Amino acid sequence: MSNDPVLLFLHGVGSSDPEDIWKTDLTGALEKLGYPNLDDVQVIAPKYAHALKGWDYKVSLPDETVRAPVREAAKQNRRDFERRMGAVEFRLGRQNHGAGLQAYDAILSAAVALPWFAAAHNYLNDPQIRAQVLSHIISLLPSSGRLVLVGHSLGSLIAADLLTRLPIGLEVAGMVTVGSPLANGKFDVDKLRETLKHPPINLSWWVNFWNVLDPVAAHRGVSSVFPWMVDFRVRTKATSPVQAHSASEYLANETVAAAIGFAIFGSQSKELVGINEGRSVDLDDPERLALLALRYGHLVKSELKGELRDRFTGALRHVQATAVDDIRNRNDQEGRAMPSEVARLAFDLSDPDSRLPEPTPTDHFSKETAVMPLTVLATDNFLRPFEIEISKTNRREAMRELSAEMGVGGKFGIDVIDAAQEAQNVLSGQRGAPWIKWGIVGAGVAVLAVATSGLIFAAAPGLAGAAAITSALASFGPGGMIGGLVTAGSLVTVGGGGIAFGLASSGTSAETLEAFVAQRLTAVILRKRQGLEPDPDVWRILSETEIQVRREHERLDEFSDESSPALKELKRKINAVERALKYLRENGLEPQVLPTDLVRQD
Image (cartoon, rainbow, N blue to C red; front, side, top):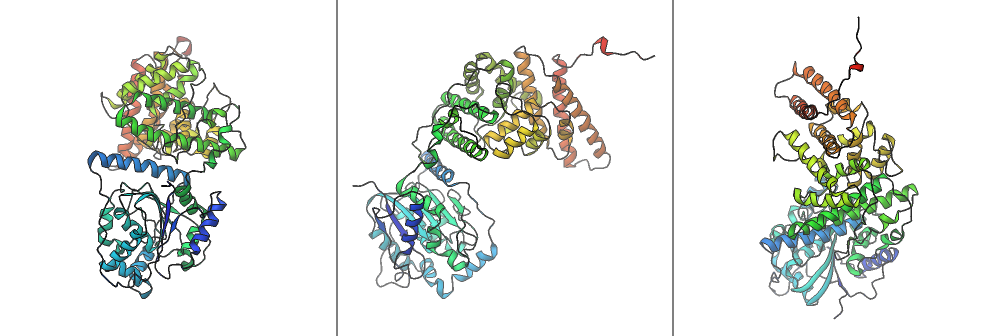
């Protein structure tokens, strides 16, 4: 039996498109994308408009054949589904859920009772009509194989209702719904929301598309009801609500067609064409930091086992694919060639079984230039937006391997992890206190980085100074892996005096200040352990920050309530700076005043 999937299209209310115009429009969009047409695809498009009007004889509601997994099997199914769902999401682009319009939702609720929506009302309220429609559709399906399920309007409800009643041997290779009313409470037929509380085990992924003018979609996707699937907002050519809701309008859209084409034909991998042909060009700072972080990630992965390794690998796949894609987009915009070291890391994320390329060991660093990037990796969450707790033992071993590859020795890597732990203990005041999650610190860090000095990565020609950081953050943003690394790197090396005012400002949170202090303190401790010259800027910046924060506290304390959140934030800032300065003083890292510096005044 052929493994080619069968395309099942379920129409909405109305005449059910007797000439299958939807198929013509979909074929045109697929061909524009470079996919084959549907000539060699088995297409099943049941016509059930008559069955929605009434029933001639009673049939039983098809049995549920797909049971929800339990316990560990449920966790594994959910994780596997998210891998596939994330891959499709990455392929299609970032989704736009939209704000939703309550007015449209109310209109849709009322419209169900109107004659034009009589068919939808019948399906929702007459068990015999529902049983008749589902039985008719199932009778046309093969008993096994792969199915691509596309549902429009009421057909999206029928598709969701059908999922747990399909033949046991039939796998849904992908489900695409368009113009769906499922977010409306009126369409929760037979407690469908509870039935599909978790993704069924026979479903690979589900994407729903909606557009602004479509009143049936109520200016809203359906992930508010089924949070495990993904909504995409698309722009269609329609100018009226009736046209905007039509199946043809949706299926002629290239984004919708891309999802259906991927489900039927698999990955075209067009975005990989050319990227793997990278050129021999020097890496710039963001690229070099990204490659170092990914190398560290792969070394961490090799230290993990079981379920933790499985989760970490899944997150690393997304982070690596996104990083390569971000660099490719940035370089295309700037007319910059793609370095071969980055190009070779590209892979098809939409294929869950594709091999994850591993970065090669990095070029050698000096100890001085290794301080910044390794401090960043020891204190920053390069896996953002994922958060996975890794033991100190695993991190130490991975960092030891990385620093050895960099030519600074394995002990350097051990020292940087221990320095980060010591900085944690200094700021927390006790061992075992929660480590601040630097990876989720807000945009205040990025603002500070841009407003002050900058990233100086002497081992590579390229970025230096605030203008370079501004450029990098404009390209990558402060929240992703690369933008986050650039931001953290700039804060580890910043030397501008103006940062004290920024840290003391009420616009900078205590969490932001703590992140800054912790990273600088980690670098200080690492330098001491490695016998490197201390950084004179750290004491000056922290002492200036203490002055500014204390002055701000005194100014507000005189008149504000004792319970003022602003005062609490300032006290937290003062506490962090005081602990750091105390550590520097007690460990001989306070700048010494020499006799020649004293000038006697008569």
